[in-house]
Amino acid sequence: MEIDGNALAGDLSEVFATDATVAVFTCAGCGHAGAVATLRVWGPAPGAVGRCPSCTDVILRLVRTPSRLILTLTGATRLELPLDA
Amino acid sequence: MKNRISWRVATVSSARWETASARTLVLDVPDWPGHLPGQHIDVRLTAEDGYTAQRSYSIASAWTPAPSATGAGSAGAPGTVELTIQRLDDGEVSPYLTDVVEPGDQIELRGPVGGWFVWREKQTAPVLLIAGGSGIVPLMAMIRARGEARGRQPFRLIYSVRTPEDAAYADELRLRVRENPGLDVHFVYTRKAPDGWPTPPKRIDVAAINSHGWPPDFQPDCYVCGPTSFVETAADILVALGHDPKRIRTERFGGA
Amino acid sequence: MGIISRGFGGRRRESLPGLPPGQYLTHDFPVLSAGPTPRIPLDRWKFTITTETGEKHSWDWKEFTALPAEEFTVDIHCVTKWSKLGTTWKGVALDTLFEDVESAADYTMAHSYGGYTTNVPLDDLLEGKAWLVYEFDGEPLHPEHGGPVRLLVPHLYFWKSAIWVNGLQMINEDEPGFWEAGGYHMYGDPWREQRYQGD
Image (cartoon, rainbow over all chains, first blue to last red):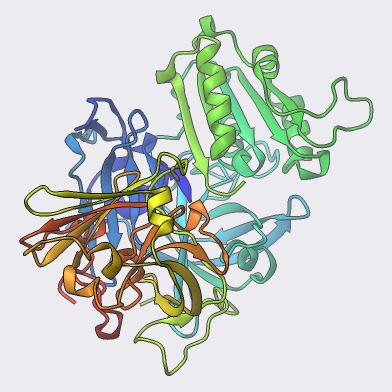
């Protein structure tokens, strides 16, 4: 099922101290930069796959196990998180 | 240690139908920290055998620290959160929330979460909201928040529904158009229009957004929410009309 | 832990003694995908086995469907906990495709249209344990379920049965594929409940 990065907010809130859906990723494939909320996301099972809205390369994978949350970020060269002002 | 977002137990205090297949649950959440319109919560259900299912739902209510001043529709009391759930017939969670849950039942939730598809009162630009079906929910929270804050930002809503009976919050929207100055609402009917409607049923198109949205020169903040294909169509039209892609925020729901 | 949601059953599911641990029986066929569904015209479809020395063995659609095919019935087990019993497929055994392939490598990486990958030891593909299938239940395999052709390795969790498969790369050392790199188990035996890394 295709959704978008907004739906990752809950799981990412258990990883990051600030809201990671407003973080800006830079795609390792095409260089596109945008908010994590704008990722095209497939999931939720077996995991959520976040793809670049510009080139559809995989930016992140998010897998929930009963005891762990595994975030794989191989498709992003950078993740820029705003600090609480 | 910082108080991280975690699961809380909410109690359903009341429920009401918005359409034949969409139901609002009013949840009583102890220590609710408040939320911004557009944010959502994750709901987790657990079966007796331990099986769990988790879904994300947009919050429908506005949040105000003090009780509602105007009483126009659903302001949301400080410790309550309202969700409007559209039943998906082949769904696993939504039919439970629309047809099984009763006042007094408890569900687990996590949130509020999501800080991107939100509207803040300090935003001064005109706002264009485009809803496809149940995509109205987070946009309704924005309309309610503006109403409760007596905001003056010009708001326009274009709301695409299959038939007049599929429109959620129709009475409240009518009331708010009267009582909240600067709010306009336009419906797009895709299957059946009301008697006397000037155009036959049609999908959202350039003409609808051009006539009932804001000109790009006004630099409006645009929020589009609905099924994936709807959101893509509407966002493409906005860009083609000359709206700045940076001012277009989208949220895609899975189902059609 | 979680409170019980009164009256919540979730999808109708049955636990049977014959199922791998932690699995439930399902009668529908859930669709899981990690990206957009590619539509591959059959005249453009191609499957290639590439050995560790770079030697390639390819079949186009005509050549592939001319190979001896088998119809068979197996059980499938998805790591998301559903199992489906008695599913009927038609396809070509990997033994047939490997007949003329010379390789000393012990591992393979399956590659798919759309970029998906999954690693499978060569031994798990041979001796009648795996197929490239193109029919499900007597019908051409639907793109949602991996058509035109998917790998089918029914004795491992279903993510190893790569949808939209277009090649196998022989590799000397085992490497993680798409979900294995994301936290899932390298081998994925449902009977030993090897779901995640460390299981």
